[in-house]
Image (cartoon, rainbow, N blue to C red; front, top):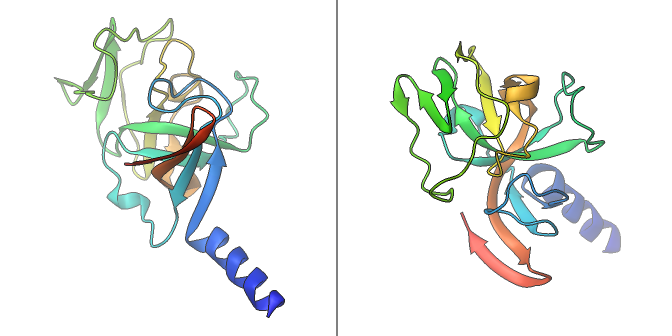
Length: 168
């Protein structure tokens, strides 16, 4: 009976739902340091992602500029395959239109690293943290393959040092 329970728990974690800890402030104000999130991996298909989704993905091999030793990162999808993306000042443009980002503070600075005009290759995604001024993201290490995306963030389970439930 104990073995069956352990196998079930491992199966759920591997294929359905997994919790992750937020170790940095790169997703502030949406996710805080110490938050625990629930990631949906069940029937997850990265082809269905839309701009604004928050996802967990494996750290890109090209990430030689950031000091993180973490294997998994949490960021927001900003650009989709085939889209052309760039920034001017603190504004991000996708296919010639200013990207609407209602999840960010009104005057959120982009930080020192602008987005160089580029067309996102097929099956690749442009990721950014919500705390743009400190986030090490696709501006530094480029787009990521969809196959590296572990799953979509479904909920915050722990916030401000206590249980909390916020569903995305």
